[in-house]
Amino acid sequence: MTIRRLIDNELAETVFFVAVFLILLLSSCATDSGQRAETLIRQLPTESQSVSAGGKLNERLLEAQRPIVPGDYRIGPEDLLEITVFRAPELNTVARVNASGLIRLSLIDNVHAAGLSVAELEKELAERLTKFLAEPVVSVFVKEYRSQQITVLGSVKTPGVYFVTGQRYLLDLLSMAGGLSAEAGDVCIIHRASGPSPDASTSETVVVDLSQLLVKGHAEFNIPLHAGDRIHVPQSGIFFVDGAIRSPGSFPLKGTITLTQAISMAKGFGYEAEHDSIKIYRETGKPEREVITVNYDAVLKRTAPDVEIRDKDVIIVSTSAFKNFLKGVAGTINFGVFSLGKYSGL
Image (cartoon, rainbow, N blue to C red; front, side):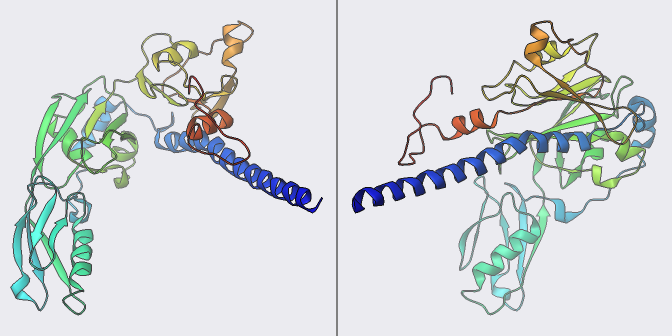
């Protein structure tokens, strides 16, 4: 009898901890889409901020150039670095970053420098030298910059691939591309690798409001660029689809496009998508956007209207927390009480 009670108690405790784990994990999944929506929407201009980019924005392009800030620069292969160690002149050297992103120094051999800022490399070298020196102070100067390849496409006068040296900013590249064309919108999209090299399999997208940068004069929108970045200036008329969708991103608004067509342009829903709570964030000329909630299944059944998409609409397909949880842990976790196997379609 005592053994049976012990087993029952252990099983109850196991079930309790599994339930708590599931609740915490599902709560985290449920908030992800909302946070992504808020981040994207904050970056987009409102109707009151929007201007004709091809006209007024171009007039301000040359006036808004930002000086180079060395702290923004990320060291890369082929850079030539001058390294000085205070009170240890025998360790001073000039080193070129090799193709693997490494530099070779006395005492500490290979150090990975690519992807670091100058300040970060100085800190790394000082930490390595603490084995040999008391409180070492290291200074790094970029003596020669490598050639960086940055692509500018879309509604600019001279689209193409540009090779630049040193730290460059968004306005630098827009100026090199001849400025914005007459049909340009007031949103600029930058695609960049999220890993340490441009060849990283994953990437991130940064949306920049050009009217905030050039008309409002907010210099923080003049973001630093890195090797491998791709700048795209779309024509006026654009909408965004994000969340549990197969191909999230920005899409041109040409003619009349409805919600179902927008979902199709984004290649349809992901497995974890919730069809009954799609949200469309729409500007109204006020600081906060209007939120339109649509039941996609009701639209297909023709019991709800197929909403027409407008310029700068942000469509967010929310995620089913439970489906997202299954997708993430299926086949990888065994809780002891039950196992999640390889579900078909995940």
